[in-house]
Length: 169
Image (cartoon, rainbow, N blue to C red):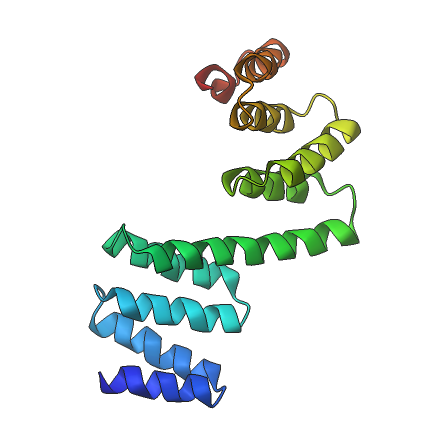
């Protein structure tokens, strides 16, 4: 309890490294306390360390699946990483891997219009990109168009009959 108050004090003083140090110590002492992981995720967010934030939020979810705050923080971490992907794409417009990763995250967050833009950009550069076609199929499914999705999956199996994901979808 004392460590928790100390970490809160460090956050108020904007000494985030010290707060994070205390929270990491608390995790070691009591690894099943959801509130510690939530506090750690918040500090990571303030430090713009989205990967660590995601890890802390996922740990909280492992402990308490129904914790809405943990899911919210996980969403914020994902969004923060999307900002990094966006920066990478702005710096290099034809960065296919970054576009695909961002599109996949956007589909999961149900931001279908934004995901479609990234997928179309990849397919414009490389119409036979299997990952982009599969993701396009997932997008079609999310939009309630199963026939179009199946067409995408079949196209991938024609291009590469060894692509297991296409068969699974």
